[in-house]
Length: 391
Image 1 (cartoon, rainbow, N blue to C red):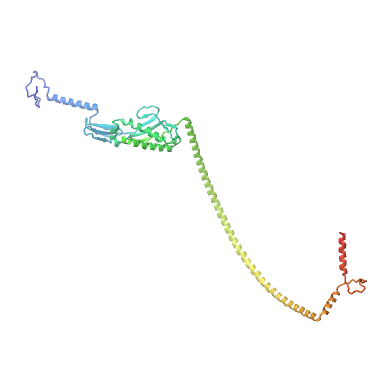
Image 2: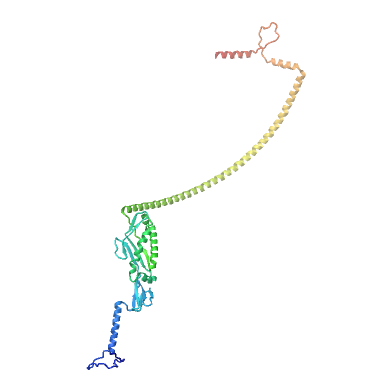
């Protein structure tokens, strides 16, 4: 049966009377207040148990997303401190923004961030591996709402995204090289940078970025390791020899420079001496030319004087011999006028100088001519004949 209760707690409808004895009504203000307080305490207890007190603390290494279940709105909280929200209407999801470590090492799966070691097939068909390949990653605070939608709350973003992409991308990039090239720090850094770039492209839509990829040394089987060590030793020896060669080239250049300086000095000295000798030779040439000119002038004067004397002497001889010729011509003319008498006189004069040997008999009883035999000539001829007979 319905009844009405006044604000003072008294009922307006008559009902069964309570037994007399001074008891308190069940709907008195005190009972109602106690009920309300109990309800509030229970609600607070429930909120405390569920963690929905309307305020939460976001740490310095955390970010949060406040989701309103009525409007569907999402609000990112990027600054550390207390965050207020409406209990049962809104909910706060907190994410760890510190760097996480994903490790590839060992031979088994230990957890989401620890998987077996990375093995790579090189470009030449051989294989090498990394005993431990660490990857440092973290969430992108500006994309925390995307992270919540894509990965879910809490640490779920750590479970699959890095594991899904890291192994394949690292294999691709390091597999472009031979083991020897992969062991080269320059090549390793190149593959490391490209792997980081590709990983960030793949993880960016999920709100995750790779901060650092470790730089371990690739490992090979023992024979290959020995070959690499030998190659490294050979390369080091080549580098050492190149340094020695550079030193020798530098020493050679220094020696050449010193020799060139010395030769330059000697060249300068020789040039100075040659110039000095050239000046001395020029001076002597001028002196000799002057002496020659003086000698030539003197000889010219002597020649001219001799020529004048000889000319005068020749003129005298010409005059003398002209007179003698004229005298001979006069004698010839005189002899011509005398005729045969002159010839006979000359013949007689000639005969006076000749000795005659006369034979006292005549070959002809009536000689018509007289022969003359040179007795001296006959004696000479007879002497020559006797000498020839003795030989």
